[in-house]
Image 1 (cartoon, rainbow, N blue to C red):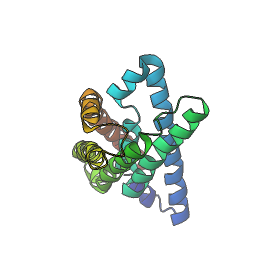
Image 2 (image 1 turned 90 degrees about the vertical axis):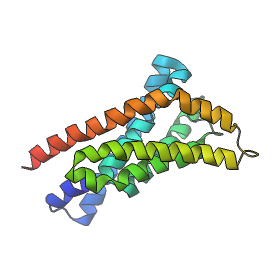
Image 3 (image 1 turned 180 degrees about the vertical axis):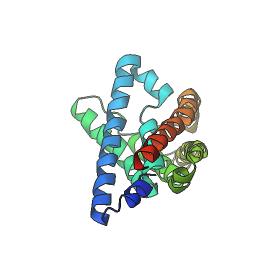
Image 4 (image 1 turned 90 degrees about the horizontal axis):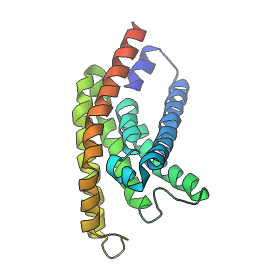
Length: 192
C-alpha cells in the first residue's frame, strides 16, 4: 500500500527505500514496545493471550509488501529478544525465538503479498491477515512437530498456546484491517 503512494509522489528508488525503511523501523519499534506494555499491565499470560507483537507485524506486511513485511517479521522478535535480554528478562525467550521468528516472517510475508490488492481495495486486508495468521501458526506447530526431539516444547504445549492466543488473533483479524482501511482513506484523501 505504501508503494503506491510513493509511486504517485514520483520519488526516486533511493527515497522510496528510505521511506519504507523508516516506516519499517517505526513498526519494529512498536512491535518491541507493545509487548512490553501488555506484559507490564497484564503479565506474561497477557502476552500469550493477546499476542501484541503480531499486530504490528501484520500491519507492516499489509502496508509495506512482502519483502519489508518479512523483514519486519524477522527483526521484531530478534531485536525484542536482545533488548529485553539486556534488561534481564528476554522476550521472546531464546528457546522460542527461532520458532517465533519463522512464524512472524510468514505473517509479514503473507500479509504483504496482498499489499497491492489492499491498495486497490482495502477490504483485502481481512483475508490477508487471516491467511497470514493461519499459515504462520500452522507452520509454527508443524516445525515443533517435526523438531520434537530438538524443540524445548511439545506440540501439545504449542496447541494450548494457540488456543489461548485465539482471542488475540481474532481481535487482530479485525483491528489490523480496520487500521489499514482508516490509513488508506486518510492517505487517498491526502493524495487527492
